[in-house]
Length: 136
Image (cartoon, rainbow, N blue to C red; front, side, top):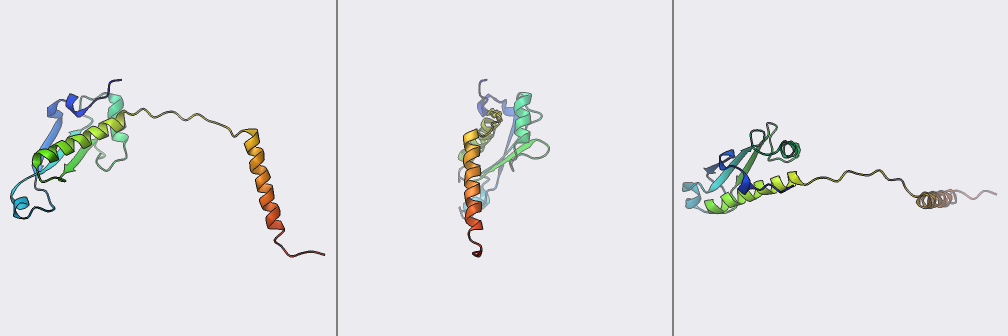
């Protein structure tokens, strides 16, 4: 399966809006909307159903119960850099959703490891029994 990136998504599925960002910057930060608010509706997107389900199932604070990914990027003082940052973070979520988890195979402990565990348990019990008062 070829990994899907943000560049392959139709641009009308990703809603980017400029917001005023907080943090350092003085008077300039109060005048200019340099932060980016990215919204991506997973359920209405053109992604394959399997990836949609994994994205919604991600227990990430950026994915709402309605299947909307909301990313707020205001790390940088430039709107272009914040836009790139938001898109990279969306790309990271898409990459995480495309990783196929390996199924766990049931295994049993070997006979030797069971015997070692029981022997050690017996030795510990014996040590604890010997800590009691001495009987005549």
